[in-house]
Amino acid sequence: MQMHEVNFLCHGSVVAVSFVASILGLMLLWDRKGTKDDEREETEKILFRMSFSYWLVYCVAFGLEKMVFPNYEPMMMTLKITTALSYFLTFSCILSLPLHRFAVRQEVQD
Image (cartoon, rainbow, N blue to C red; front, side, top):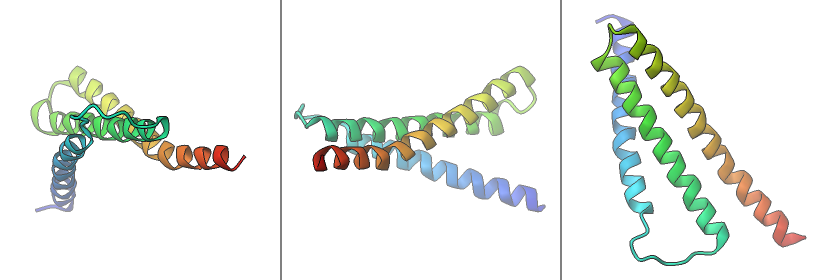
């Protein structure tokens, strides 16, 4: 096996595991009871849900890009754009979580 194939298998495995983990994360965040949380907790749940959802989109687009449509160029370009956008949206949601907590702490202290 060449090094490129090994890297692809490792990355593909990590993406597959993170796909399952994202589904589990969304299931854990599913609010079945309809309990009302305060605004801060609700915002954090939404940011977590968005992070997991965007990551699921990344995993699906990555899988389709590598496995299903390797020779169809228009679809490949669309999938590459989708993977890039979902990756950056995931990053921005993850970055927003601590920023949100910091902003809430600042409001409480003031």
